[in-house]
Amino acid sequence: MTNYLKMPKKSHVLALLELGWSYRRIEAETGVRRETVSRYDRMRQANAAKTFPGSDPSPPTDSAGPTGVDSSNAANTFAGSHAKPAETFPGSGPPARFAATRYHDAILEKRALGLTAQRIWQDLTDEFGYGHSYESVKRYLRTITPRARAVGVFESEPGAEGQVDFFRGAPTLDAPTGQWKRPWVFRLTLSCSRHGYEEAVWDQQLKTFLRLHERAFRDLEGVPAVVRLDNLKSGVLRACFYDPDVNEVYTAFARHWNFTPLPIQPRRPQENGKQERSGGYVKGNALKGHRFDSLEAHNAHLQHWNRTIARLRIHGTTRRQVWTHFVEVERAALRPLAADPFPLFNCGERTVHPDGHVEVDGSYYPVPARLLGDLVRVQWDAQLVRVYHRDELVMVHAHVPAGHYAPMPGQRTPEATTRQQAFIAQLLGRCERVGGPLQQWAAAALDDRGVRAIRLIQGVLGLTRTLPREAVLRAATTALTHRLFRYKQLARLATQAAPAQPSLPLVADDPSIRPLTDYTLEEFS
Image (cartoon, rainbow, N blue to C red; front, side, top):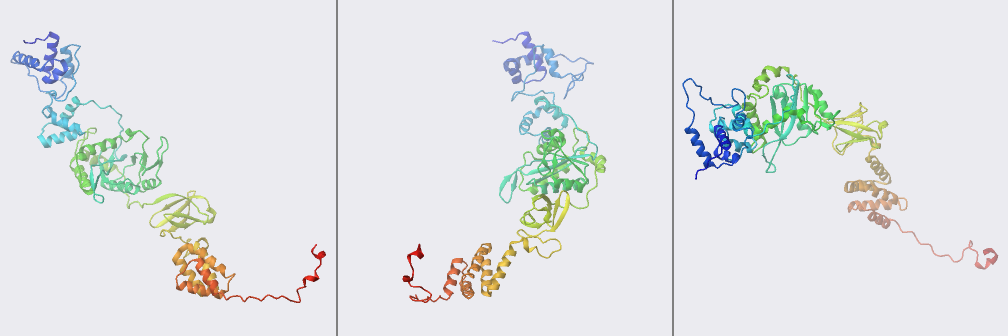
């Protein structure tokens, strides 16, 4: 038995057929079975209006109609006020008026991978020979994805600003560990032309961060007046809405390269919006779906992509080719490069020890005695150590190896009075005054036991107060021969070497001793 639809439902189905909807999609929207929709479609085609001479054929469209009215709204008007736009279901065919309709499944697959419209258009061109414009893909994607929320735009003059940040790169093989890791990708984007520099690294340490800036400046052949950065620890010590604390080394680096560092406000990524969008463009267009066997291969791919894709694209905001815009407008507005690389240094706060020294990387550097217990700032590199007190440079030292004391400027050796070696030298001098064998034994004990021999030598020197000097020297000679460096051993040897004291006989009668009979009880009372 043939099913006949009521007029409102029939009008609704015919309107959706006119829009090019698939049978499956119409069934999901109206509840009418696909067989019934197919029968009405055949009837519609058989009763199609004829084209008379002079009438204009319906032009193929890839956007809104000539009056600017969206076709879906026209369909709603045709079907009645109760109609609503149908949702897109998996497997349902998209509107046939778009040039990208025939690649619907491939576009959905690439969209599910998170690829951008630009990347999808590139892949369609490479894989299917798609001959239409990038705008046609964007218009088609707007029909199957919701529109993004509009945000404000920060305008920038040529050469006025660059924005920097890190983001995760593609999986890359780390040769030393044999593991696949995601390196950090540094990106500097010029806010006017959108031209930029990107490089993959394994860490975000301060030294790496600064050297990336320098390579970016040299690649761009200039320095922007302001570098806007996120609140990275390499650049910002303390994030603050009103007055952030910029890293002292990064501040000195900015003075060296003649730019102003400008941290963005906390939790306000839109202030660094050009870089955020630029980083997303690199991730989605250059790195999505790629893996690299080394960090060098990762960076080689980024360089090739920048030369052949990124700088040659027509930017969606400026409507100009990025490279042409940079060369003609922005490059001349950048500030000149510094003549030499920035001399890297470290900095920190130190408290002056009671011995008048500050510790830096395991080494000890003297400062004026008036600063004992005070807090000072120290800057150091591979050659020099500079000590500041209340922004005043109070001392400059040459770098010494860890575990050593630096001499005061103008002295050839460190001050002995401030070192433990001074007390050791004093002990060795006392041993030498007792005798050469004891001094030789003490020096050997220090070589064998280190600082633990100090108290040992003090104890052996104390034996000279109770035992003859010759006995202690004979014991020291024997102990040195047998490599004995314990107090009990040397004390026993010295006691054995000491001559025995002769015992005195008991005297029963002596003129100085009164006999007991001479004493009376009164004398004891």
